Every structure is written in structure tokens, then in C-alpha cells.
Image (cartoon, rainbow, N blue to C red; front, top):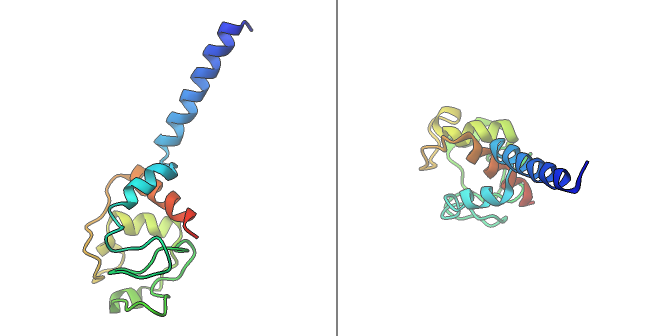
Length: 124
């Protein structure tokens, strides 16, 4: 393969990988930007704010932080925050935990939800 063909092939491959990554919503940096919608209530640390801290949310049981006062609905939910559960909850919180007190109507864009979840995985 000539040098020019190799350069073109490499450029196409890099562009394709970048497109596939963004199309599947696996972008931590984009997820951090989406998280800016959450930061007013949720700290990216163990500390609690209006909402519970999100550090270590992946794999955690719902309503499990002992120093946060959860709504009765969230205490009854008995969820484990994995990718699938978070995706559904972030799309429409009231459908997943009816009566929860989070004043957030949901995040419709599946790519943004996937990016946000990727970011949440990094705050351990």
C-alpha cells in the first residue's frame, strides 16, 4: 500500500472510530458536560447536597447512603444502580420510581444518557 493510501486509510479509520464512539454514546468528556445539569443537586463525591452524592453510584443500592434522607418512594424502590437501571431512570425518573422527589423530568437523548453513565463510572 502506498504512503498516501495508508494515510487516507488511517484517517478514515480514525474518523470511523470517533463516529462509532460518539454514536454509541460512550464519551466520558461529553458525559461530564451532561453531568453539569446534575451538579446543582448531586455532588460528584460522597458528600450530599439536595440530592445524594453520586460517587460510587454504579453498583450501589438505591437509598443506601446512611447520611441522606431519601423519599419514601426511593426507599421502597430497592434498585441497584447499574447501567440499565440508570438509563431507564435518567430517561424518565417518575416511571421508574413513582413519587420520587427529584425535580427532573428526564433526559430523552439516549446518547447523552450513555455518556452520563460513562462519566458516573469514573467517579468512584
